[in-house]
Image 1 (tube, helix red, strand yellow):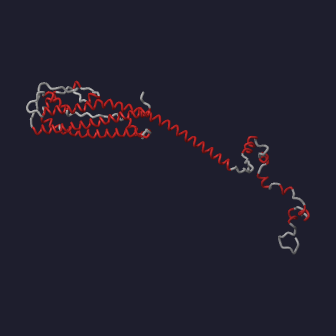
Image 2 (cartoon, one colour; image 1 turned 90 degrees about the horizontal axis):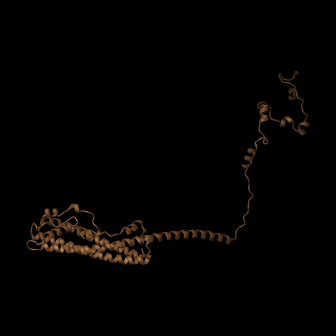
Image 3 (cartoon, one colour; image 1 turned 90 degrees about the vertical axis):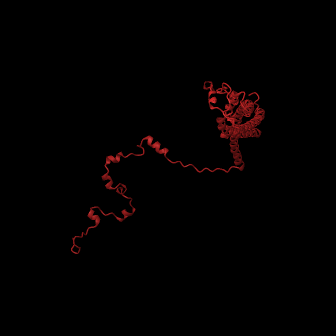
Amino acid sequence: MSEGSPKGRSDRTPSEKSGRPKASKKSEVGSPKSEGEHSAPDSYREDTPQSELKELPTENSKPDSYREQTKNMEVHHHPQLEHKPKPWKEYLLEYFMIFLAVMTGFFAESYREHLSERSKEHEYAVNIKKDLMRDTVNLNVWIPALYNRVAKFDTLMSYLETNGPVNDGANMYLLARLSTRNAIYEPSDNTVLEMKSSGSLRLIHNHQIVNGLMNIERTVEQYRNLVDIEAKEDVMSYALLGQLFDAVVFDKMTNVQRNRILSEKEYARQSINILAKPIGNPQLLSRDKEKINQLIYYLHQRKSSFLGEARHLMGMKKQDEELLKQINDEYKLNDE
C-alpha cells in the first residue's frame, strides 16, 4: 500500500484481485466467445441433478403413438383454390332441376291426398245411401201412422159430441188413453252429423248432393218444430181428461206383464201392447159441455199438428228418393 493512496483502497485492478489474467483488447473484440458463455448458468446446473437432466425425454425417445398423435394434430393448410365462374346457363339449369324436384314432390303428395279424399268420399256416399234407404222404409210406416192417429182423434171427438150415453164406452176410454201418447219420428242422419262435426262435408264435391242433404236437414227441423207444438197441446189436455174420465178405469186397462220393446212400426202406430179395453161400457164422469168443448178443441189442434207432421214427412220422403238417385248416379252405387 502506497502512502498517497486512501486507506483501505487497493492499488490492484479487478483482474488482479480475481487472480485471472487480464485479457487483451484484441481478444475482447475479435476472438469468439468462450465455451462458458454458451453453457447454462451455474445455478441451473447446480440446482438440477445430472441424473434428471439425462432422463428428460427427447423427440426421438418419445413413443411412436405420441409422435403419430402429434402428427395428426398438425394443421394442414390447403392451397387457395380458384373456381372459374359458371356460365349463367348452368345456374339456370340447376334452378330448374331443383324447381322440378320440389314441384314433383308437391304434386305427388297432392295426388296421394286426392286419392285418399276420394276414397273417403265414396265411403261417406255409401253410408249416406244406407241412411236414406233406412229413412225411406221408416217413412213408409210413419206417414200412414200419422193419418191413423187423425182417424182415432176423429172417432174420439165423435164420442164426446154424443148426447147421452155412448154405445161403445170401452173403445172411448181406450182412444182417450192413447191420445196422451207421443211418438216422434227420428231420421237416420248419423252420417251427415258426423261429416258436419268433422268438417268432412267438403269431401262431397257434387254441390247438388250437398244441397239435397241441407234441404232434408231443413225439413227435419221444421218437422221437429211441429212436434214441439204438438207436445205442448198434449199436456194441455191432461187436466180435462182427468175431470171427464174415470182414472180407476184407466188404471185397470194397464197390463205391465205385456210390456216389451216395440218395433218401429208398433211405436209409430201407438201400440196398445200394455193397454186393453176396459170391461163393460164405462161412461164419462161429467157431461159438462164447456169442459167437453175445451177437450175437443185441444184434440182438434193436435189433429192439425199430425196433418202438418205428415205433410213434412211426405216432403222428406220425396227428397230422400231424389237424393238417392243422385248418389247412385254420381258414385255408381246401384249394386251396393
